[in-house]
Image (cartoon, rainbow, N blue to C red):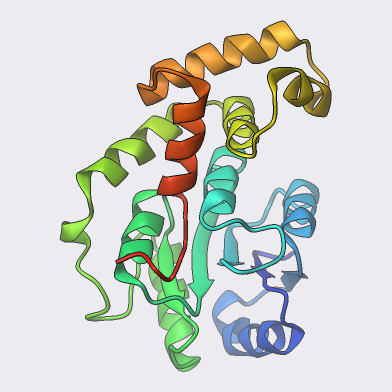
Length: 214
């Protein structure tokens, strides 16, 4: 049975990673080319332990998908795979629950060591890449606040950040608008925000994966 899934929209890259990790994982490795497909495969294969998540894959908005995966599938280890080596983004990803951050510039032989480290219960970063002790306390606090949200509340928060109205979110999620209002109240309390606009802006800012950040 498959233990891992590679979520990346480049088939050649997926094939290279599968070959590099074959002996380490000793099992089938599934593939997804979009975040929607990734979610579907995770639901169909509850035995999966590990996800390699490309930050620029279709359907993946910055670090939003990392938070959604950590909320919906808390037992699955998420390894971020990206060409982005911005220290701020790496610190954000690790604070938000990533088990490892592997730049695509890392030689394939090192991937096996990363996987072994993650499966052993430890976090992994390339040596000398970034100092996690410099992580902004605001990012740490926000990550802790996100962890307090239920999966449904996190979906509502993302919808708010996307500019959706309560009635639109209720329709999308198939619930009553009063339920959404209750979720919004809980979200504002947990994130210490005064209104939904502030919550949406904070969500977008904290989960951005722009190369322009320092």
